[in-house]
Image (cartoon, rainbow, N blue to C red; front, side, top):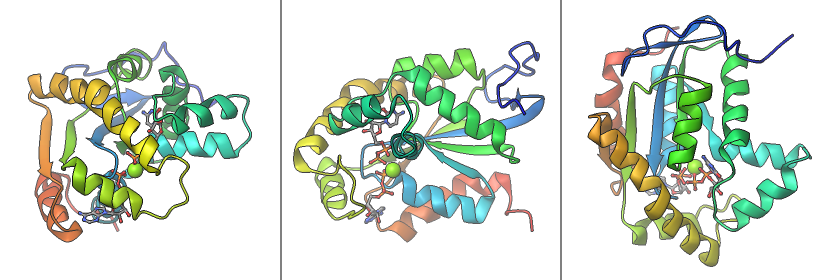
Amino acid sequence: MSTAVDASVPVAEQEDGAANILAGKKVAVVFVLGGPGSGKGTQCSNIVEHFGFTHLSAGELLRSEIKSGSENGTMIDSIIKEGKIVPSEITVKLLQEAMVKSENDKFLIDGFPRNQENRLSFENVIKISPEFVLFFDCSEEEMVRRLLGRNQGRADDNVETIRKRFRVFEESSLPVVQYYDSKGKVKKINAAKPILEVFEDVKTIFQSYGPKAA
Ligand SMILES: Nc1ncnc2c1ncn2[C@@H]1O[C@H](COP(=O)(O)OP(=O)(O)O)[C@@H](O)[C@H]1O
Ligand SMILES: Nc1ccn([C@@H]2O[C@H](COP(=O)(O)OP(=O)(O)O)[C@@H](O)[C@H]2O)c(=O)n1
Ligand SMILES: [Mg+2]
């Protein structure tokens, strides 16, 4: 069975905000951005539970790729330990495979696009414009506290790598948020509040998608 998207399939409704077609299926995408430790993964789990999206974390897909012993694993591992961004063709391919494999037609793409190269690669390969970009805004002081308390055994949750990740976020990821903001697509959330309070604000945004189908 092929998991590749057929590039010859016409991509319908390419105007901003429109649902698009992935392998003949209409698909809606929400990008979830925010600094390391801002709560992207935590809130995505809540959104999945209440609104029936499929959560695709770019970081998780890359970590699985390392664990699977793939030929790119060693390279991905060293890039993540440096807090840098993995070449887009790798990440976009993993996202594409996960989307094609899924039965769902609405996806939360967490931690992506993290730079303009990520964004352009997704546009060129997957050809889907996000419905909107959910942006979790949080101070570095609070994010560092959360990352050091996360306890998931991650190789990049140490003070030295965290510092590098913050710089990469400012230099490479914030310009992506600014790009989407200039298109009126960013929904910014104050992520410094407790988890349930943040989710109240998130819920308001997702209300239009209705409850998860039974
Ligand atoms: N609003 C919040 N207040 C306090 N702690 C939080 C909040 N949101 C998430 N956390 C905790 O902070 C850590 C990082 O959250 P996570 O969702 O993994 O962030 P991200 O995916 O943006 O790096 C986790 O241990 C999580 O339980
Ligand atoms: N689009 C992406 C997402 C993550 N990554 C890498 O994976 C690391 C962890 O990403 P993540 O999204 O799981 O991290 P958090 O922001 O959730 O803490 C990043 O610091 C990058 O090294 C990447 O290269 N490209
Ligand atoms: Mg995360």
